[in-house]
Length: 415
Image 1 (tube, one colour):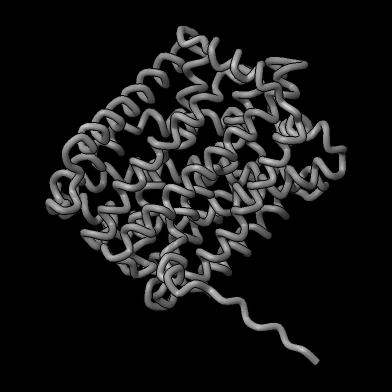
Image 2 (cartoon, rainbow, N blue to C red):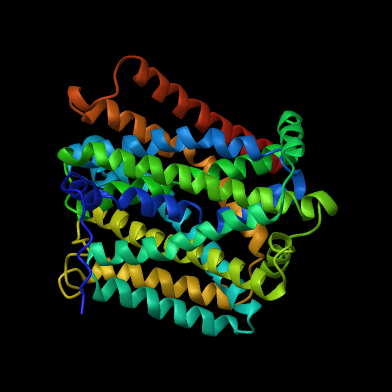
């Protein structure tokens, strides 16, 4: 009887593997149900004309979250807590208010996506909501940070099925290039959806989450380098998934029936999976959408509880027992319950909600990114502060992204 030798792991990789998590989780959550729907709508209405934006957003997303990472590791404070310490409680409440608004919109979007997936298989909405709320409450109340993080990564990786879906759609490289080169920047409807894509990638809750998560995981400045790689890899993955969804829809419904309505999860499923067959296509889509929505729901609910805890001063760690941090676990759970009740009431149009929430995120960018820039320059010590040409790049990127999100969102909304 022979035994297999244990798999050897390079000792140099162990510190890196121990750090990986917060960046990957927040990026998987970034490609949430609302983002998938916004990307699908982009491909259906504009074909490949919004594809280039998905890749342009990769370095922008990394710059924003890397700055967040620095603030957390160096100051050892969450984002809301840091704003309160540096600018006062009133400004902290303003920032956390934008967070709560963004989180509420995100939760409704995620739960609507999950309800739609359930309906694909004949499951009533109230049953889907009940199962989801119980499951997500259980993993938070019974786990630790690392347990929750591990579950979130495993769930979120189901999003990668969209890469296969895009491949199976057999997109034309010539049509991609043609679409990218003919983007109608003067069109208000195009700009509205472009703002939605920006808001689908740069979200207020992402900044709060990653800054708090690195603290809950016990990371410090010695982990900065692997944490940057964690963030960079996550940024590439999330935008590849967004691009894949857009490509899959653009190559199918965007090509054969442009401007076809995408009002339900059923229609989005049909648009994404026509070449896979009914059973396989529906199953693959369900896995991807559930992965996107569940990991985002975990992240968004935790972020709201963390953010409010940072401003109000109550215990706010997954390392604490629920009896020792009742407000933290209570807020997390109440958010889930309220979201489930609202979605079960059948008053939400999924596609309109998702695009509108992401446009709202874009409109909030001046506040969110403005605080991020000021904190980086006023709280980080010299060795960790952006300097030289990189400081200029960071400032320009944050300014242009904020301005574009605000102007495109406003112009598109009022046309």
